[in-house]
Length: 179
Ligand code: ZN
Image (cartoon, rainbow, N blue to C red):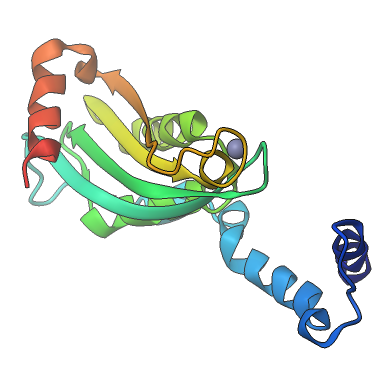
């Protein structure tokens, strides 16, 4: 793999043997352990549910920071994700929602699939009445190349179950827009 990366460095016009680049292939591979850690984790392993102390109102975790990699350009995209669900008897530890985001963000992704996979995984493992996931992100593939619009933010959402109802969706959106 290090040999392949040295070839890439040559391809872009640099000299992989120079001092500053000597260790770069090794460092790139090491960074992948974190950037792509999601492939080795299963969502069901973090989604332990419990019924004690469960509530019947909407549960929201807002503005979870994430870093991901665009599968089309192998460039980072990053931003925040807000998740809401309406429990049906079972709830999960709120930090588990953040862990779930990590599992799906730390892969090659597109923003549309990221929200859908988080929503589907919650529906499957937690079996709530509904889920909504909203993601706001900046893409390096838009900022630094292509159309070069560095202020543009992309917003995607996924809604499942009762969140298809207007009033449920509105309640969630009001919560996440409030400071
Ligand atoms: Zn891209």
